Length: 87
Image (cartoon, rainbow, N blue to C red):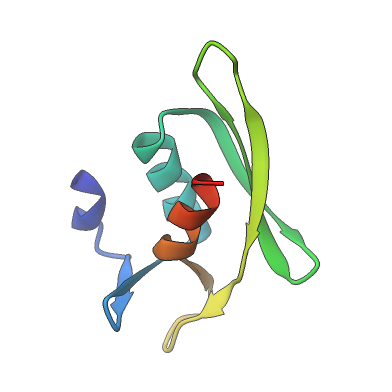
């Protein structure tokens, strides 16, 4: 996948962590979404999206935000993002 060529993606203990921009880019490409956005909600990051299928399904899910060592920005676990998209 082209996604892993991005240098900002952090890999810690075999888990990829993405910042919020990388999260949107990844989900838009991997799941063929019409739109996707992230917002803070009750200490977690809410991911909202709409699919490009004829039904145009709108949905959202929340994931934990992680502080990765030596950075000032939060990151989201790719594993949790993929699990959220399967619901």
